[in-house]
Image 1: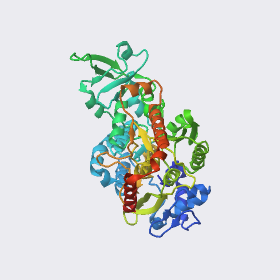
Image 2: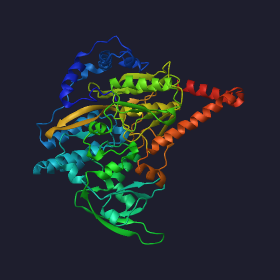
Image 3: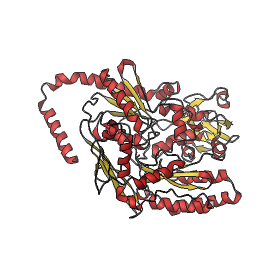
Image 4: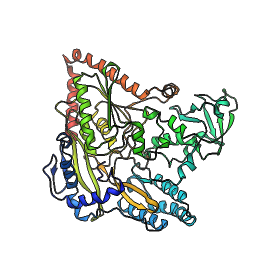
Length: 551
């Protein structure tokens, strides 16, 4: 999101703070400055079309003018405090500024009461791993992918907790059954005769569903915010444990027979089972070995945008983040698709770590057929203790927009502004969204939080994205409902899992099938459109009524 510290290393925060405090003049800009609402971008693509990043940064700074006098520009530094004091002050700081306390039902007193004693115990024994693990548990207790705790060194805690694998992976089908999806070659699992598709019914003496629900996911590389995202990672991390830990697994036998029991011991496998269960990204990538989203992105692609042509001429464009320099290659990819007469476009956002909201709104301009309100952006005003609206942005149709079918691919690793284009598609009925899962559900305005002892960094959203009626949008709520759900949900069954585990990008295949279906339907439209009839006339009137109602 447009948090000004979104991409910064901690060492650069001082420079940005200085810019915040000095950029008080209204620039000559693509947006309109107003006293009541910072900046208004009636066409979010204009700042990127003019290719002047300096001028755009001035606009971003100017959007903070309504609250500039109340900003200090400094990130709290608690590194010299005791661990316990730093944790207490961090909780107080977050409680004051976190944008979704009521929305997500966060009980700060309960969180402090739960984790403060564990911090104190870790400090007493000078156990850095226990200290860092507890901070991760605290962060994980707030189901918001933007609430993060990170450090350059995890003090060995991650490997100590999940460094071992059992030689198998599992997945929950749409039917509710949990099946084996991966068996490591030469493993005890393979020697026990367990194969793909075998149903797991118990884990360490508990029904497998209970065991999954009890699984910790504090080491998930991209923290989930919704119920389905959390469930996905709990399935993945069920088969992770400290090296040397035993597990007893119950495998269903033939009907009416007693399940067979297999005893396994976790071994260091380099996080192999996590790599094998990354199929929701459309590829195998060892996200368990990644220490950050930037490290994970480096595993996936060196570029911010990649493009290629699929069989039949369908254009494929993958976008991995929203930074200023992404717009021009994205624009070029869409223009190439138009010039080539592509019968459809697939936009892959399954790993998109977010960035600038206006860029996501600008993407949408290439596909929508009318102006679309994108958001009011807010942030915490220390002077009033309330959220202040700092900008308003719109997606405006490009005159040379692509009018053919467009399919978006998303996943729980589609986070922050990466969820913006799916949001617009869902609201406007543009194209479709294809996936096994919805997006992450973390759409707030993230900022750096306090720095804690041992160099532990924090981040959390101090602002929200609001719809045109002033309601929080996309961020998951206290019921863990949120994100953007697929409009074409790919079945999670043995067939699709077998294909995916064999290396096929099943979600992409479903997106391509949808595009060809739309292309076939489009070729039939002219013969129907020659004489619209009453049904079409009434449908047109209904669309007009809905449009004026939204306005």
